[in-house]
Image (cartoon, rainbow, N blue to C red):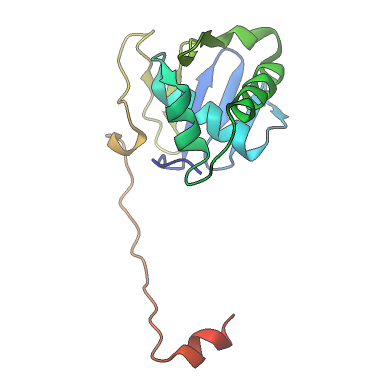
Length: 157
């Protein structure tokens, strides 16, 4: 759903929450919180912005790529996120007429090898995009498969 994909093994901590990217799961004090796909993607975009304003247009473009949706859908998903955050619902701040900000201090941890970085609310700043992480594992080789005829391709369908 999101245009820029994180490395996958990363964990973001804020308040009593952990956002597990590989599992696409939000935990509150270790307990899984039920989030829909769009709500999870929306939370990820807001966390990635690290306190910066994310406009409504950018959220719509990144969470619903190549799909025309009403702004009301965004409001519904923000409401679902705030409900999931419970007493910490104020972590998502509305800039009326402009967009949203995620205001909680965020700590980023690589799942393996632990490469913690504090948010700009903490001691060290975190890169603006997931793709720029300095603590990466080597990319795995990918295998490409080509078909010599349409019939071979269709037989796998």
